[in-house]
Length: 232
Picture 1 (tube, helix red, strand yellow):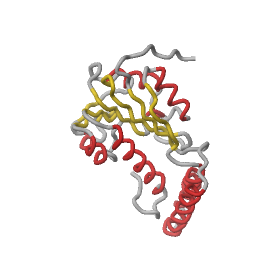
Picture 2 (cartoon, helix red, strand yellow):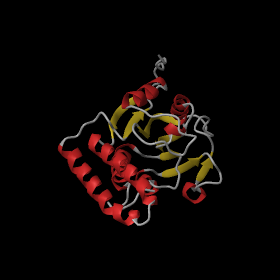
Picture 3 (spheres, helix red, strand yellow):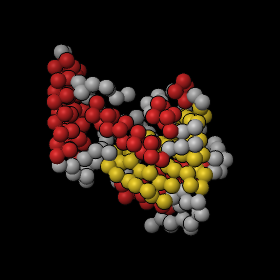
Picture 4 (cartoon, one colour):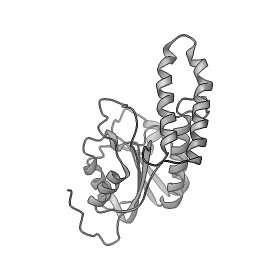
């Protein structure tokens, strides 16, 4: 889980993630909500403010039991729910771990009610993690395409951080490699803070969208289902 202090190596990216997800949830989350890949429940408090009910889903029954309550265990490739039963589906930093991401988005579209909303985040530039189940990285264009193919209407897709935050985060993760040396962990913490605060200021002064750390997509299921776009 991301640290709450600038002295933590991943403070800035997790701070930005939380702000972006909170804004999207306030604007679009409602009713019965499904959180695919809910993990440790990092955003439960944000989602519970907006939705009438929340169901967390995880792949492995042995992980995150308390955070998933009320919870379901299953695969994003075959969601264990009937058609059109959720007003909102969210999935944060999960799609890159799914071997068939288009199939997962199609399953999300299936369980959404007409007029329902998907809020999804996925990485564009991020180091390999949770290997070997780390398959893909996504552009905003790619997320939009997957949504349209599934019959959803894209409301918005945007980067969650610009070039400077992305560069600062990658540099901090590189510096973290030196924490294994005796005494370096304490010495590096002020440097993490300096790099991340500088990156935040630079990103606000001159935001460059191309090299985004993550993208966040909001899409809706049309009330009258149009013909799905065919994959190219």
